[in-house]
Length: 220
Image (tube, rainbow, N blue to C red; front, side, top):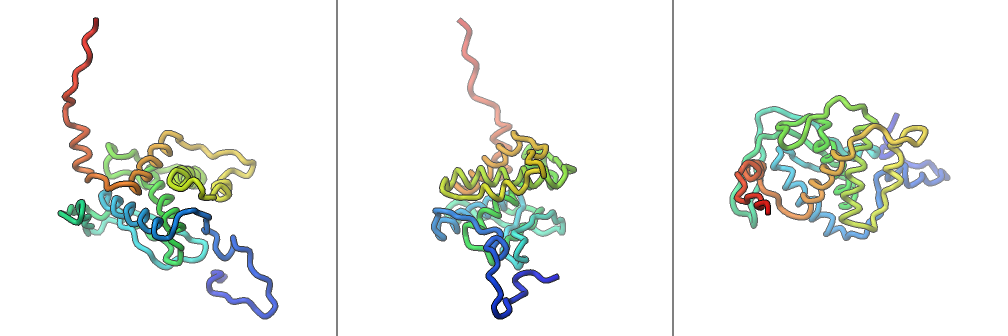
């Protein structure tokens, strides 16, 4: 078996369908520059959870993958306007196909991060997101792709990716078992990661644990 990238057409051979040659190509109204900004901003925010995002060689039908790692290394995340750094234990390696166009790379990044924040790889701290290891592959993929579809549709309403989501339905068109609340929460987080620099997880947890300065209204 050969990957399509390892073959070349013989004389007179018909052209391959675009979904075979470029299976992860999606239409978008974003410029390459805008898509690159989304990718870089999201990747920087992912560092706060110990996720290192890199571009690397992948086969035509492999868009990306995320996996756990625990080898004692650390990643560094720069502060606002390049000031200050935070050091975070490296927990996850996320690789995106280096042949992808900017928008396709960003869309794939949202999918892989959705796997993480839906809990498919477990959780380093259940205050951040729950561990939901053990779901079947159909549920994992449908949750991740639904979250990705929500994120991309909010950021670029002109994007067309419904056909890819449909591939994850059951043979009879049924939706696999899924947690809608987890998908929406993951989608909201990944969307925010593209829009602004998020605080460190330590700052975020400290803010949640800080006593409220507000008091309930007195009854009349």
